[in-house]
Length: 451
Length: 178
Ligand code: FES
Ligand SMILES: [Fe+2]
Image 1: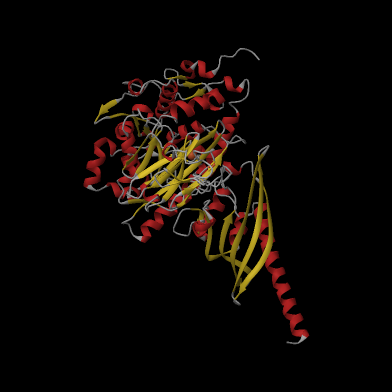
Image 2: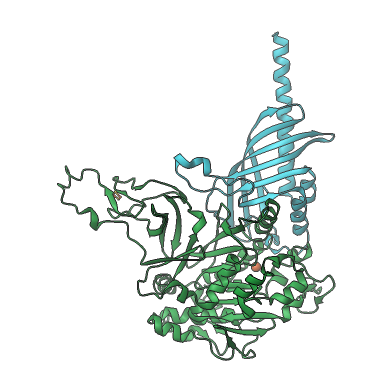
């Protein structure tokens, strides 16, 4: 073994905002993964579920928080609490269902029983075996440090010093969630899709902003008309098939008009600008936003977002009222969870049409997402080769060519398809790994004036 | 009932069982040879093809284990969507299936649970084994509830509900049919 410096000891070298190069080892290094669990997922506000998934007293939903799993539980007084799904006695999971409704949680190992509020309320043999010497109040289920909701989206953090949720989200993160909340009186569609991809979680995150890949990765979806593209507009000569034939790579009006927002703590939004997308797709998919109150609330810049918001570290908001959680399970295993939403006030036909599009685009059988996983799995594999992993990951597109405009609390750029948001995410990721104070972290993730 | 009549109804049942099984095996062979257009032709114009999500629930709440139509699902298809999926696989640019997966649909425990003369309710179990690239392996086991209709050419699928024996899917996609 040669003395290759450990990746965790050379954080400075892993991401370069100047060259747009990323060190590939970050996608398979176990120590990096462990540091991510501790310094990112152990501190950040993480999305757990939507308020409407647990409407009744005793409703619960099990959600991942980094390397832990928490139970999100509706309380008697209507509030929500979340605690680690591990018994305070000897560690067994106190709940083995993914969701449901209970009066209390009884551990199936020795029967310790916890109330909806996580308090230990029953211990078999409390008098006979423990001689009444066990102080029940000292052994509740362990609560998250802070829990809060933003417009029905439930988040929690393990860090009691974390800033309030709204500050953490900032204008960029809030705008992302507004893209669902502003559609109407939103509720979760029953059923969260969950599937497993053999890839590093960061590949699934940077792809959120990747408007360079659909033309190739999802070419078959363009061909059958799932993604509207002008019939005769192709870019010739870039991609050639294995027989040497030019692939007809669809070219969209939106490709020249992307709108990128970068925010503190690493949140970002990237993708088509609203107006150019409506030219391509027609106005219908965005009818919900052409109401004066909605336009006013989104603001003159927020209203231009028609791409993909991402809330650092792992929550993606789509353009059709879905939210995807990228759940790291190990350096090369990531679960993808899909939460879907509908407007309670829309008609049965409208709800059916919305669900139809949600089912057919994303998820493991989605006609877009079917194609994504293998690219990420193969990319992850190639970060393990002794020589392959020495090759940098390139995020150079548009590098150094975009002015940042700062207005209304947003920092944004107008550019053709680019890789600014991906690089921004990796920059923030590196700063998180250094484990600075919250104030330092915020300062180091204030956008510059040019990218 | 006479012995002859009993024998006749047993023979009729066996013939019907044979016909249904052969139909399901034929269908499986079409899928395993990636003959998706011909496979979609086996569905009626009003077909409904549905694979719900499944959730680990306690025994007491097991009635909520599967999502229902109108809720989130992995597949919720009419014939038109099945045709679009088949067309997509045939584009030559559906990279999830290029190189193609090697699949084997093993269909077992075929039971005709209802026969009203026009339509049959048929339950079956399946094991769908898939390998991809050099060493990717996926296995899906589950059961299907079909409604088959007697049509001029034999049988056609009116309804297929697919219940997978997994909650968190262990595979990276479902770029196949069940
Ligand atoms: S581990 Fe839970 S009661 Fe013992
Ligand atoms: Fe994609």
